[in-house]
Length: 234
Image (cartoon, rainbow, N blue to C red; front, side, top):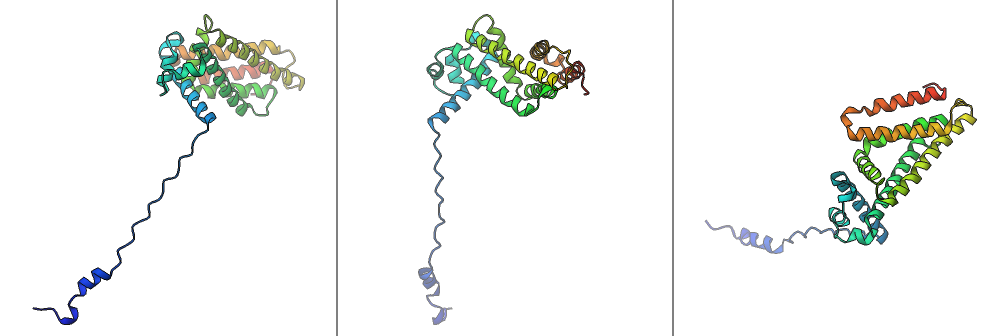
């Protein structure tokens, strides 16, 4: 049956006159922000420090090479050598990098405290740092202990930092004595030496046999003994 004359050509007319939908707009990709040279250098240094720490834990300082550090970090084998010049210089910078991280953590935890409260806050800071940076500490302890027989630059940095650590603790104790918070019979220098000996000795034992050392228990016991020595309530 033929379609009525009024219907003829309707479909074709619609197809011709209908405007096709406009194509969806394609969003331009945001242009990547280029890092500055200083930012690129800082990033590559951080990656090489991480690579160096991994290698130190795996094979010690003497077997670690600058070539391996560069490759492990994802760069050319010559970048670490070009950047640091020698393995001893790289390790020295690694110690500086660690000390910066630790100093920042200590400042955050101690804040404006002084005297006995500063000593107790510092002990909590060390305990927290160990819990969140155990791999870092393992690498640094290997580096520190192996630096005794070699790596003069590392040993010099470490000796200077130990002196600063003891000086800070002694200052807190003296501050507490002057303020009447800490018993005047406490020897500030001796306490500072014992404080650092506890920290470094405890960490060493924990790294050697982590399953045999209950860090929270040991730190809590030392905080209590500190409060008792200072003559304050805990």
